[in-house]
Image (tube, rainbow, N blue to C red):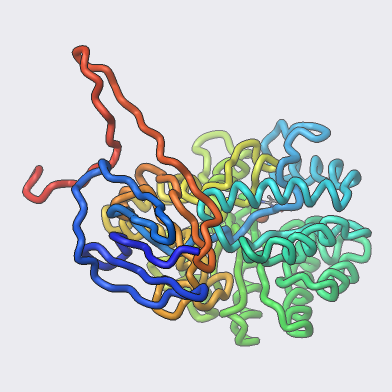
Length: 440
Ligand code: 17E
Ligand code: FE2
């Protein structure tokens, strides 16, 4: 068990800090009397019950608010998604789904969770396809949720990939999934056969959430069709039922195609409703725009505008080497990096304040309490190989240590690189701080 973290940098605070941990909680955060040399020369280290952060950034853990662990690591089985569309992904997954076993799902999901934990994630919301009469994947993920509770908090969404209304016994399977213990109610209104079916699916999801006292996370308008308008239905249901704090709209990529007059009108309802948004930059930029020639749409929701309107927005990875996405290592800084580019959130303040998109904002979306690094909160934190937030984002810094309840659950040794210039070996430090007085 770690009892002290020395010489830590903290978000939103100047200087260096010492953090005391005891009984799985943060018990003190005090100004450190010590100093640290500038740059990347000193690294973090662990001796006995003390982590010396060496001036590295210490934050609450990363959060994965949207992933499909049931499908993780199945890309190419039995066939690759060659068109790169969401629709071929659904078709390829249906082929693979026919061969699921509890063992198969558990071993793939476990591997994916290990990758997540290795890059500092400790809270995961996973979707789990309920359009399988046996609910095999759900049984597997429910077992993992209990078995891995020490290292990761797993929320499972009952996710009807092929529809609540359009799939045979779709609603019954959702009910069964919730009775078995799924944490969150999902829906896929834009994939239902008709507009009316989509509206019915959304209302059914809200009814089920009320009946079983669960949160809601809807795959909503994940399509480039500018006429896909289920988000207004989700937001209005959330508003009328006063459920916004427990509702998330995932993807909403059609918002990137709406005309500005409609988007303006919609924005008021979105703010009023208090719902959260999850964009999935890696997967949205890959799957959307596939039916366009040029100009080709980016297919991401209006992240910048939603943030400006005061809405809560966070980023998810969505897929790890599966029918919808052939890459991925579960690193949320890679997700963030893509999102900042595609959404053009590249101003200085936007970059220096961007970790919230994979941490604090995600905590709000998932309804996590006790998440921030404060006295009295759980001793869950990560030590990043970064001198500040901006540095972490620019370098996609490694997580040197991940602590859960004060216990080290992941560790990465920093790599070192040098160049040979003029016969001299020069150690390379990719971190960089703009010096006062430098430049204009
Ligand atoms: N299913 C879906 O409908 N949309 C996605 N982005 C994934 C699965 C990954
Ligand atoms: Fe998804």
